[in-house]
Image 1 (cartoon, rainbow over the protein chains, first blue to last red):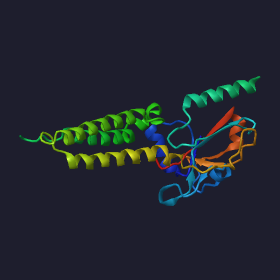
Image 2: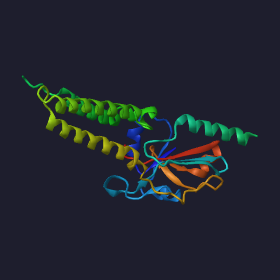
Image 3: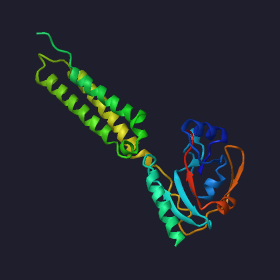
Length: 95
Length: 143
């Protein structure tokens, strides 16, 4: 699920253009962003608070299994790497 | 003797612009050329070579080639563009908060309720009852 300060309207447009099928959640007040410690204060347009890029993998018990706090805006987790992490964790919990 | 226009320094400058612009408009879409902008850096090196050749001709054979002043100006401008590009791509994008408070593996994922694009509320704990897990992707927004 993708979480940002974008409004639902903006995310709808983005999903439509890019053809995303996963849920986009709107956190305009940065409440959840702060709860997850990924606030990037004043880094958005007009000094708005936004999220820094980060991924959290949560298992069915609600435990965080993997965290990726990218330290560079340009260099992101590649989908194939994330899928591999998910596969490994799923196999681990199946044992 | 008629002095030739120094195409080399102009080509070098032009290539610098093309390199910077093509990264922003094309190469950032592909991780292989975005993460380390090697194509762009190669283009910068080629541009530098063109400028060097042009300056060598302008100063080495001034009776045949123009470009002593324009060559220096274009050379400085190109260096400025390359410098800005490198600063932007290697320094500015690392401008991130430390996020020391972010939950770590092994900790419980903080609960939340947020609305999706359909206006429906999504509750993390409810979602985890019917799914094998969840991948939360926080991003900057503003696309």
